[in-house]
Amino acid sequence: MSTGERTRSLRRAAVTLLAAAAAYEAVARSGFFPPALLPTLPAVARALVATTMDGTMPAHAFHTLYRVLIGFSLAITVAVPLGILMARFRPVENFVLPLASALMPIPSLAWVPVFILWFGLGDTVSILIVFYAALFPMLLNTWSGVRAVNPLWLRAAGAMGADEKALFWKVMIPGAFPFLITGARQAFLRCWIAVVGAEMIAASNWGLGWVIFDAKEFLNTDVMLASLVVIGAIGFAVERLLFGSLERATVLRWGMVRAATT
Amino acid sequence: MPHIEVRDVSLVYDTPAGRVQGVQGASFDIEQSEFLCIVGPSGCGKSTLLNIIAGFIAPSSGEIRIGGKPVSGYGMDRGIVFQDFAQLFPWRTALANVAFGLEMKGMGREERESIALEQLALVKLEKFAKAYPHHLSGGMQQRVAIARALAYNPSVLLMDEPFAALDALTRDDMQRLLAEVWRETRKTVIYVTHNVAEAVYLADRVVVMTPHPGTVKTLVPIDLPRPRDPLSVEFLAFQKQLLGLLGQQSAEA
Image (cartoon, rainbow over all chains, first blue to last red; front, side):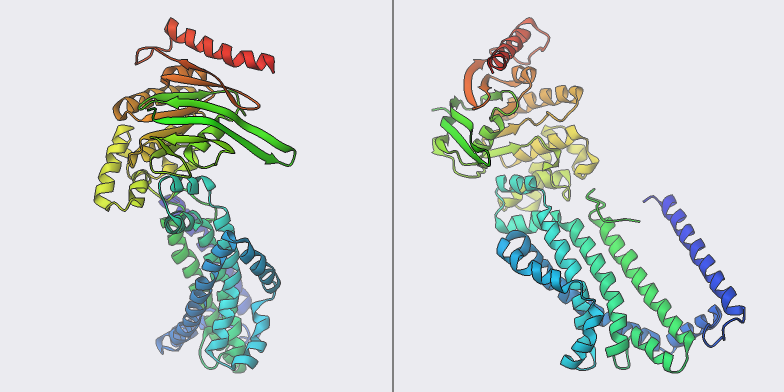
């Protein structure tokens, strides 16, 4: 994307957000709903600044990010090798695929009560939910990615003396990279959604999901909305800035684009 | 002793429709530093024969010997260039593509990059060393592929219609360039093509194949001085002879 294009797309995004904010503000100020239920944007902003200044909001965000990081890393560590084994060895595929197909449609949040019974309240449940949510997109994308590696690359590499290890690290992994990035993106989005839900039910005292649930008890809608803003902002930042720049540095640079880049 | 011996090589495929004879009893020799073209109509098994020599496919019967040693599987004594531009690794620059074979040999970065750069210079692409394949034209990508196949210094270069997907003008340039590269490197080349003019321009000898089953019909030596003039009377006479040999069999079929 050129600089001009990026400026234009930023401007379009800003216009959309401003219009939505203005519409919300108009409804909030109309007096049609009680301000306690529908706080104005300045009130939300004040709550956001206050909770940020006293350190509570960053601490909540940190706890949520910590759970995501652990669960997401675990999911990648399991899914990538397993996906490669599935693509390379038919018996592994035959064994794992039915299992994945059966487990994947179950929403990760449906497991929360079960996990609470098994593991009690606390980090373990949230981390496992994140793991569950991230596992399948990463697994299936890795599997498709390795199967989509151009056989000509393997043939050319083999003819140039590549052994199994070199074929794996220098051909299959980079060859499957467009799928691996897509998988990581989908996995992150799924687990970011799941962690907030899991925290509402299973977390004690810390986490952005817990903030929303706790603030509801005291009708602190401004704090609830402030937490939503933080959840949205972090999700956006990771998705666009982290994965976006990873994609630009790799598959876009290599001309191997297949993920949506808008 | 010839550099490469092809001895009574046959390949039988099992297909749902039954057994298909792909190549039947192909035999010929290739001398050291010879440029041999294999021509034949589509489906005559000429690419299959090249794949057998490359070691990608094992023949049903017969034998290939290179330097007296029987071929089984891949070997670093052969460099291979395919028709498909996608043979280059898109995640590697032109230089890193060319250096791949040397990297597999365990050569250090500096040494392999300097050799790779020399190879790129041989195909006149040293200015594009840092470019990724998707920024190169089809002709440039095929030149990188040639440099890549030569970089680890195999004694044999196998080429499977490497210029078939290029436009006519680029193809002419590429043929000239390949003739120069061959003159400088003195590799033994086996080059598969269905383009008769290309064969007459490049080859010392031409193997003419018949289709279904693929057998060697005849061997035609092209004893024209190099560089060859594609518009000379002798050149056109060879073209006519080869076309006659190919046309005759389609009339019989």
